[in-house]
Length: 135
Length: 135
DNA sequence: CCTAACGTTGACGTTAACGTAATATAGACC
DNA sequence: GGTCTATATTACGTTAACGTCAACGTTAGG
Image (cartoon, rainbow over all chains, first blue to last red; front, side, top):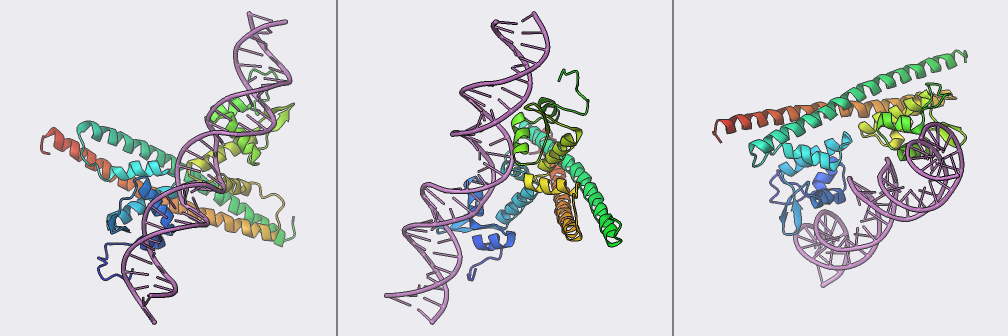
């Protein structure tokens, strides 16, 4: 915004929303469910660079078809917080579970890309045939 | 099922559902919206190998976070049907759009895997520190 | 013939992830 | 002071993708 005290590491809600092409409703919703926790200047939300990063991670998760809860779990992995041995071990397990899902997705994507390649080849073949009036 | 005339390329609804771990409700829903079209023996649904393949593709799409409509579009790519030049060109465009999305997903997954790797390393580090009573 | 397992068709319910509309406030500009 | 413009809160609405439940038909086994 046109604000004198914008610390350049602070973002208004519309700043963030324009950058990531989401609506304010979405940002507020993520706050409602505890995925974002911007500070306030009066009533107005002020987003930090960390908030921005979290939003970026959430949206990356969305592109991958993760639920917001999955994204929450993954994001929490970046900030282990107060962690004893037990928590760390379950965190490692969670990491490996997510990793496994991701490898499955990698396989799926590779297969799908192969399928698309084949479909495209077939298309070109059909176009060639049409232009030759063969079929 | 235990049927004498099971052609081995035919599946009952529960066959398919057990194999892919979905409920009959799901299979019927996919039929409702035209994603599956099993034949019938009387009232009972009989799924062919082609139906099975379609279901497999749908579920692969789901794992990737595609909507059923996206999956429908992709699956339709495998059966170009009656296609003139115009349709083929728009199909090729659709293929490239999907391809682009998939490459985006590949990037996202690779980044996320990197993040997980880092998170895991941090975990191990913390565990080491704990066992040494450093922190 | 009875029952159990499997199948069918409605039809209403549910959840996630927001959309949308109404209303109110606070600062910027003329 | 009046008027935008951005922001806030509240609350009901919406869509996709099924879940769930009721009520019913049918086929195989004991």
